[in-house]
Length: 356
Image (cartoon, rainbow, N blue to C red; front, side, top):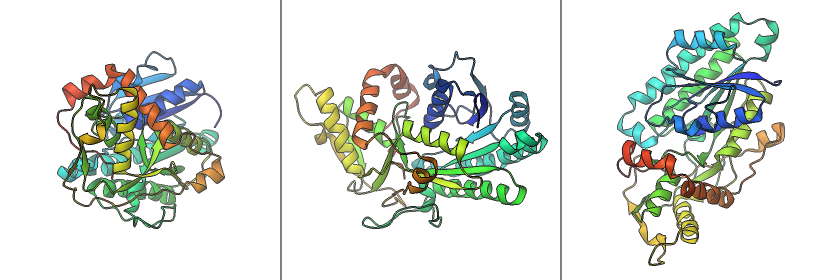
């Protein structure tokens, strides 16, 4: 993919989507069109750094709105779609699975049809260069034993929650549109992301902000569930590699080679905050950890094997879990302008967010 390509990012006001928009605009190699419905987790404040750029445009719309999407694709002469728009919170999917079906399955189906119609209209060179990049999750693979196994691109799908089932279905639809209609697609499945601008119901930001305020730190069960953690900026660089150089019809697993138990993550956050912002009585924030009843269908362990993307596309995570977590915590300490309005107005309560 050459310079100045136009990328349509769906869900670009979300956590990962906004990071994609910021990175792609900052390179000077792309024009970014951000299509976002602005549901509860969408936040245009996350895009403050690029909102004035001539290489960035925001459009508030639903991916299921065929007319708007088709018109936008033609108007902007889009070269690639990076599809991140999704309902993504597991606990919310347990409470209300219908929204996950509508957005993640039906929405993806409609977006695929819009992309297919647009792609068929392109001339030979533009048609050959077009890409539909579907960004998904490692949760589609189900879970692993605590002591063995790792997810590869060949791991059978075995989703455990309504969220992961909806993402698995969307993955299958994307592959079907490639096999049946020839739509040029690439896919990626990532491990748990963390980093700046992460919505405060997810585990890492929830614990950071609760710990900062001296509030209880809720941990499911005994905190033994294991996740592979990936710094969001590393993920974005991997996504750029996939959309620009990934092989057609292929999927790429993206992980940070950083497995940690949920309890270890919470303890690490406590220790870093204690160093940078000690409590008045100098006590350890680990004392705030509170174990709560586990949720239904809580997967034991996720572990991603990123060998394929490392081998084929030359990508490798640059941040260790420790370095990425420290950067994340320092960002939250320095940027209450972003999280405090969400914390106080949009987000009321301590809903857990242990990502799978």
